[in-house]
Amino acid sequence: MRQISLVLILACAAVMPALAQKNTLKGADKFGKTITAEDFKKHLYIIAGPEMEGRETATEGERKAAAYITDFFKSIGLPPGNNGSYFQPFPVYSDQFKSAAIEVNGVALEIDKDFAVPSSNYNATQYFSEVVYLNEGNFTDSDNDFKDIDVKGKLVLIRLVKSENGRVVGTRGNPNMKVAAAMQHGAAAVLLVQTGFPRPPAGGQGRPRIYINTFGKSVGPNTFTISESVADRIMGADWKLALEGKIAPKVYSANVMVEYQKTVNRMYANNILGYLEGTDKKDELLVISAHYDHIGMTENEINQGADDNGSGTVAVMKMAEAFMQAKKAGKGPRRSILFLLVSGEEKGLWGSAYYANHPVYPLEKTTVNLNIDMIGRIGNDYKAADSNNYIYVIGDDKLSSDLRPINEAANKRFVKLNLDYRYNGNDPNRFYYRSDHYNFAQKGVPAIFYFSGVHADYHRPSDTPDKINYPLAAKRAQLVFYTAWEMANRNEMLKRDRPLDLK
Image (cartoon, rainbow, N blue to C red; front, side, top):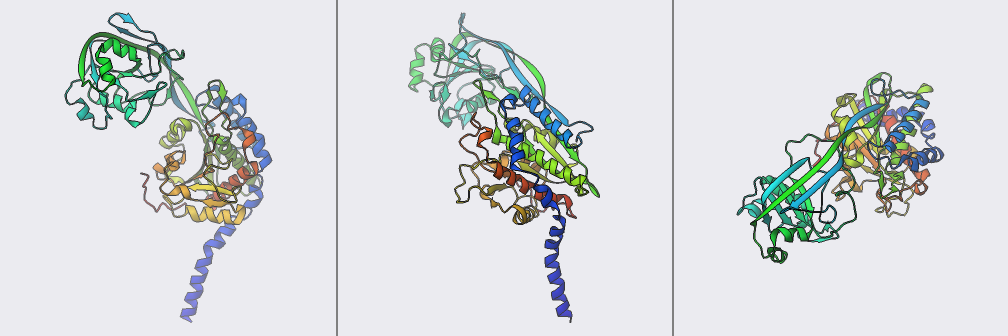
């Protein structure tokens, strides 16, 4: 009898998780089906429409998109998630170029004809009576490059190894490495010699730089890109020898003035937070996220960003609507859900980093982050026969052993997509580190990143709403919805039982 009882007990224990999930997911199908291709298309044509001007961070286009999203949240009755506000603003800085000048031995040079400047320079006027020429090198062994010459507090002239049309070719010509090496050894300013002058008028610089870190531990040397004729003006006959690699590091007498002036504008970008309060586990939380920003305009063309990431934005909106309908029908989630749409992802995961560092809700009570970034197309890498029925699942093998079983069970029961895990391993694209879930994972929050892959229109004006596979995008969003439903209603938060190894 005891043996039989033990068998029965073990058998019951084996089926209990399956029965529990079946009960937890009961009724989910009705609400998941409200995420339709038709609604998806209606919203995406607006989110990724030309009037949004590419939704670049801290621009009017981003603000228009934010207004559309928050109006939608209001229309479905979803409350704001940040102490009565839908917005979590974070500061963004933009440099506005004013002027730049270089004089060599009393002769004023012309911007764009003789020199150009990056927007990362700081306000300064500097006067030098000597210029230090450094011979070309890969600068990976910077001590060796500088061992025979002192550049501390001096103006340094560096010839880039090779350039075409003003652009450096190959890693040996990486100007950032060279400037960093010069900075390490105390250079006060740097002249980088390039080809490609004269250049089209750009006021000395291209597109204004925007950034979030205005205070740094150190300030690098101001850097100016100069033409070969300017280098010849400084070095004389030695310049031709330098082109042949025959000149060692050397100090040249020359009176050189370099000047850069700009204004720094402080702006704000906004994360958008919609909050659905749970029932008996309302102090615990899920975060369903996507970035709603894109890359704006390039050369008067709008990068509409339909797939990247209008598709993820609309998916979050439609999931919020589905969960709100469930709540109104008495089927609201046990845990609270934060519908988080962040900005600044394209600039470096800014918005999600800001939320992770300034969480409105405790991260230790955040059971999971389900992040959606590009789910509307067929990626270049997907070659399976059934290309209209897949999704890349990234990160479900990290941080929690609960992630994959829950996601796979929801998929098997409802949508039956082909779950592709190719980017979970040794991925040269490093997709795991390139979307907003990463900032949650760094804080120990289990996360899944849903993705359909890059394509020929990635970060181009041709990423338009007419190219989206709407039935497939809706189906992918449904998978996230059903996975979130289970995670919001199960008895326990997700285990955090795997090491935080994000290298």
